[in-house]
Image (cartoon, rainbow, N blue to C red; front, side, top):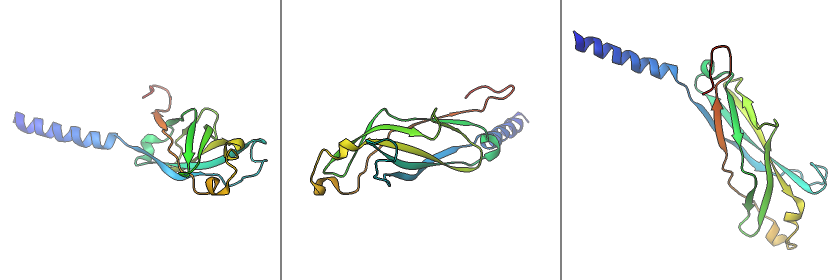
Length: 153
């Protein structure tokens, strides 16, 4: 009798925990690309690159309204294996580098700022030309939406 009750309660806990929790996934949708190499892109001496993250959830009802904060490093580097270029700053569309989950799948844009003088250090076209790659260590924090009776996670 006790074994049967224990087994039923254990199955109930396992089923409840699988239904109560959800996951939010973040992946790179589009890597940083520097499309406009003109002086009017931001300021006279800077070039702006644009990339995007894809944010999606497996349980829209639970995750709707949660806040995701993105933390970028201060600076970074990218290289074409011949030339290294320093990225001055990473940012997002919002000033606080965060977003609220409002749909099941969302695309979030982020930006990289490069000083034009960094590219012009080498005068040889063979060294400057090519596809540049780099890595960005981004930290993501997920917070529950603050409503009546709810606490931050």
